[in-house]
Image 1 (cartoon, chains in turn yellow, red):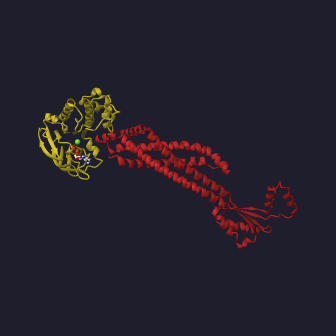
Image 2 (tube, helix red, strand yellow; image 1 turned 120 degrees about the vertical axis):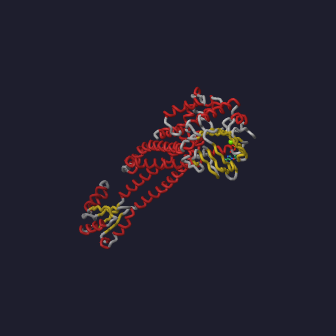
Image 3 (cartoon, rainbow over the protein chains, first blue to last red; image 1 turned 180 degrees about the vertical axis):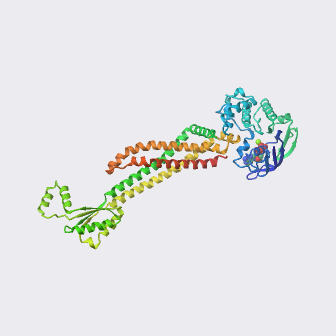
Amino acid sequence: MIQLKNVSKVYPPNVIGVKDVSLHIRPGEFVSIVGQSGTGKSTLSKMLFAEERPTTGKIYIGGWDITNISDQDVPLLRRQIGVVFQDFKLLPKKTVHENVAFALEVSGEKYQRIKKVVPQVLKIVNLSAQADRYPYQLSGGEQQRVVIARALVHRPKIFVADEPTGNLDTINTREIIDLLKKINEFGTTVVLVTHNREVVNALKKRVITLDNGQIVSDVETGRYRI
Amino acid sequence: MILLPYRITKFALQNFWRNFWLSVITISMLVLTLLSINILLVFNFVTDQAVNYVEDRVEISVYFYEQTTEEQLAGAVAYLRSLSQVRDVEVVTAQEALDRFIKQHADDEEIMQSIETVEDNPFGPTLVVKAESVQDFDFIIQALENPNYQDLIREKDFSNYEEIISGIRGSTERVQWFGYGLTAIFLLIAILIVFNTVRIGIFIHREEIAIMKLVGASSWFVRAPFLLEGIIYSVFALLIVVAILYPVLLTLEPKFSSYFGSTIPLMDHFYHEGIWIFVSELIALILINTISTGLAMRKYLKV
Ligand SMILES: Nc1ncnc2c1ncn2[C@@H]1O[C@H](COP(=O)(O)OP(=O)(O)O)[C@@H](O)[C@H]1O
Ligand SMILES: [Mg+2]
């Protein structure tokens, strides 16, 4: 599903983001990427949805070589990948429903479809009752679940979450992780970037550890080792 | 897809209303630019009309000696008419010249008495020559130096209209340059303001734009509202200019006409040519907006 071959990313002038990373993530896997701050976790996840392009190496998503994907094709890729970012916020002047619908609207989906899909994803994230609230009327965890719902509207085959629990307390964190597990159970490949030890240990899934932009360990049912 | 134009329009209108004062400033600047262009157009039109008007009235009176025969006169007329620079030759016979003189001075007893004492008609025939253009008068005057006619001519009367006209043209040119300069400055400011408006628009919508990009909106969908907003500005600006211009022209036309003593068909001109003038101005505005928006998006919108 996701394949990287000797991928390096150098930010100009010569800051190393990731260095010679090769990995293969199979369909339906749940992979955590861990490592200290500044070790290239975000760089790696950004390259998966073509927010950054590798300097050298090759990246394949579902067999599609996106290494030098054209600007025109980027939207096509992004409709197949759900993305959640730590600083990737909701629009404050839109309700929960509108925030989720927005993602479909700007992709040119028909209103009938939007009407159908939005309640479905809100149900998945368990926020049906809050559909008409505004973001400021929600807790941090609820807000993050709306962000996740928005990332699900295209029914992505891959879900990339970069520190989705960064600002959340333990209970909210667990809720979000449970949600990610649920998404994974639907068959979606999940890539979770985190530095939360408990999260990784509780998951008992594959863990890839980065250090200085390089993979230093890659274990099935791993534990947080740093 | 039919939905996209609707949503793009919705987004563009949202941009427009959310930055209402910015929109107002942008449109005002476009209006100023357009107004200065249109004032120039009106000015040029009126000047042309004025010069035409003066040119129409410029003529050389060629006074012949009384003993000039009709054949000689006819020869002179034919000769003048053969010149391409001559537009028209009017013949005033000796009798007509006398009649005109009497008519003109009917109130002046002294002159009337002196005319009565003269038995013969003191006037000779006169040719009133109109030229195609003011520059042709020199040529026509020279042509009359022709030895065939030179001795028949008593006097050539040619008020120096060329000076008047070059006077008009001279001051017109200065005003025109001022107008061009002003328009260029307004244009530059308009471009900068549109650029800045789009920049601020991109800044205000940066989160929406980031989300749009991440959820797979096409870059065209992100850009189109900004471009459409530019078209909305252009249409508004043009409508305002038309709304200002027509009443102004309507009040100016009689003033100009009475000043020049003949009709200056301003309204007629803008009525017939207006569509073309305004359509090309609209196209130019949209072009300016598009270029300016494009530059701003290129600089600030990474899609
Ligand atoms: N846009 C960028 N321009 C320049 N350097 C960057 C950029 N993004 C990240 N970096 C650098 O790349 C390295 C890896 O960063 P990042 O991938 O964000 O790490 P992490 O997500 O693990 O904290 C860091 O040294 C960071 O300073
Ligand atoms: Mg990071």
